[in-house]
Length: 117
Image (cartoon, rainbow, N blue to C red):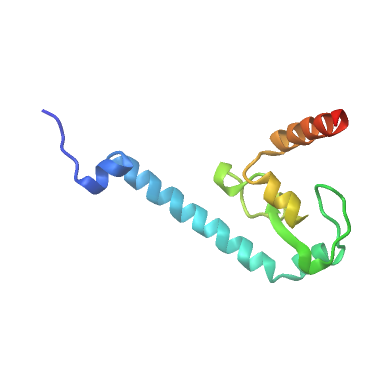
């Protein structure tokens, strides 16, 4: 006999999958809250006061730097200080959800294509 799911359960893939999804969503929310709290810490204020983008090394005004997770939250990263860096808006936007190795590969390919122009 086949178990029938409600429309809501079937959209997420069944009862146990829905529960897993809700747990992951709660964990993600908790990590985002930790990041928001860190944004108000003296540690973060010192980090952006240096005015340097972690990825490109450009000097920026502190208010132009954004908080980036080297290992994105969506890929299992956490909001621990070791995983958070100050990045210029351009680098943060380009990096999106890439892992550090993927970002390095992206930069390498970009450098090669820029050199061919």
